Image (cartoon, rainbow, N blue to C red; front, side):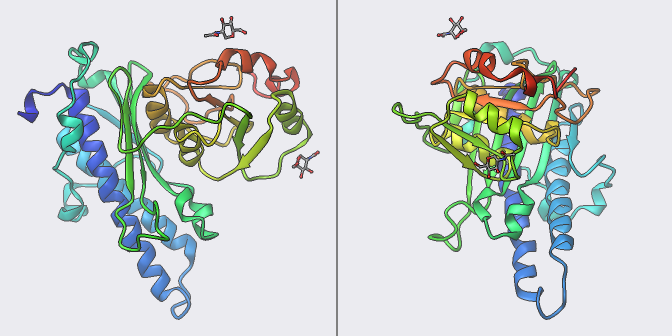
Length: 313
Ligand SMILES: *[C@@H]1O[C@H](CO)[C@@H](O)[C@H](O)[C@H]1NC(C)=O
Ligand SMILES: *[C@@H]1O[C@H](CO)[C@@H](O)[C@H](O)[C@H]1NC(C)=O
């Protein structure tokens, strides 16, 4: 049955399952660290690196085995692992049943593997993890067809961790034309305008931008995945990232879920990023994303020229 589902739907179903397995691997590595970090003098950065690499091996190892013709690009560099280098229980063969049972829009029926690029960030929000902001941590998988984002997966390994110590986290997914799953979308409040942005210090031009956009409230959180979650769950209307430090694998997955819900993610000038396999990795023109409940182009037109001039093409 599953072999008859369109390629993009099978890829999304596998991505959902692989992201969730990767989240478990991250928790296993971090748990080991929490137990041994003081006595053994383990460095938290080493653990992050181990969690990052292991999660990426799981995701890319699993997807490349099932979908050999698809290009997969991960944050941790090129995938050179031989199958024997990856523990067999990290190779995920199951495919999320809810995704697989969905009625895939016809537009996806004739896509070739060569037209697809999968962008993987195995662990987004690591500096937040060190500060104990566990729910800022996400595993991101984005699906692009002919350079355009069409779908994505955002897995939160530590979702609800305070209440649910044995928690399995949660996995949000979306495919443009099909919709979203794994969470209940909420519209943002209609009586105020909320912007989410980075936790790092804002300079005068960024502050001027936030003023020009007339934000009633600014929420500073870590991680691209987590900021898009704020839009998906109606906690913010817009997401501004006025820096070049974000890469294609940070945005493709979250953009896929946001777009499937009718939202928009572009650069500071209002243009979508290209996610083809030969593009440069940095999102050099910044990020501006909105929920479907606000007018993206109208807000883009309010962003001061001083800020736009910082991000030339
Ligand atoms: C920008 O705004 C933040 C928060 O309101 C403030 O702490 C910071 O000093 C401002 N930066 C500048 C350069 O005005
Ligand atoms: C959004 O704003 C633009 C520019 O201000 C306007 O041309 C367009 O009609 C608006 N779109 C919607 C759906 O309101």
